[in-house]
Image (tube, rainbow over all chains, first blue to last red):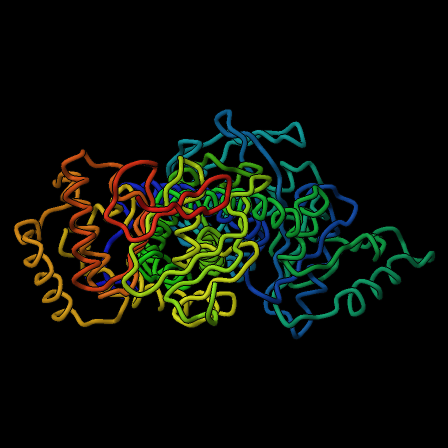
Length: 396
Length: 229
């Protein structure tokens, strides 16, 4: 093999290098699995509502989860009227039981929903405006529950004592966690959630980044809160409410109860409530990397001490410490490269199997593998740095 | 003691060395001249290897001065020390210390690699040396395939290949049988006479008759010159 190291002969023993390489492979598997699973979890949850910028979520600040709040639906009509807004999707997200298995159902106005979330039908047909008792179901949810396009399913509400027989019109795939959900017309979501037609869980708005708090919520809240104003009016008279089962009415609300966040911030906000912050993830990763680093350092020092005779001979015949350090680092570089590539590949393959089989879920949503190249480069650089430090420290 | 420090090949002035609480060398003073043949006798753990390592710039003393080829070792960095070792000093160890993954020929070439000699020249000089010592048949063998005597002769050849001015031999006969020990001593004597190479060797044998010119005893960290009969 062509040797670029300063001392073009082999004095490091292959078996010892193999043992060192095994430690490197295992350490890089451990570091990569920790980093990638945490990143996948964090990114997956953050991107749950959509990955694009300038998708804003209107939500109930009093709710403890992203799925349990309620806000007035007529706000969607107000939002869509703004010229900067290109799509506005009122959605009801509710847990339910199908074939004895828990699954999230999302009631939507399909036309608006599709402007924000990209899904494509892989079996059967897409829902259309005339469908009242049909749903489409995500690929992973369909596999997990065991349903196919054309099947009839009994959907039992968890938050309200209702159940429906619905027809599965199609199976869809998406790039995100939507594959774990059932998409239904908005009114089905509202029934299963046990709320009236005038409420939704969230409203997702796509368009220029607008200050909704100032431009919409405050004026509307002030208007609806006037004492001489009747509690309810017949209709919000908006363009969206023309497509729903019953026209939305303008309900009294407090502007401060409606949260407005970009999608990623919205989910991060909820994660932080449960202590899952970027920092906590970083600390977990660092702890693993420190453990792996210590192992690699020890392995590098052991490798050098195993070769103390050879190093002693080379020193006695005129090799300087600096030359030996450089030479050993050169000789270990291909070992590092091979071990790291093997370790990272094995980690990705393992995680892919684990995640694809749905063994890592958050609220019945599969975590999808996110291969963060930057994180992997960081891990590989850290491993190389530890090897260099280990070799440098050991040759004295 | 006379002369200016640095006149000899190697000169130790009041050198002391401790490992933790154990003082191994106490104020050692020794000069190695051109063509010298010196024996340093002492029991195991007496500090013979440490003394040789200090002479060969592999270790630094705690106190005292080491002058080597006119240079004060205290003022020379590791790179410079390594160059001195490559060009002027040959080492022979008790356990032969050949690199097991390299053939005899490659082991012989090692010092030449460090001296920056090109590949063709390295091979030529290594083969010439093997031929000179009648060991050309061993060229492609690995150390594990050699007898103890053969390994030590290869180690001596490696120490000689850069034409050093001093050979430091640390108990070179202790792993050999009597016959091979005698052969080795004759070989070292021949090298000393023919090439005028100074040799400092250590041995645990306190009474054996050696072909050396000066004889020292290392006891309790002190070097005592023994009068020759």
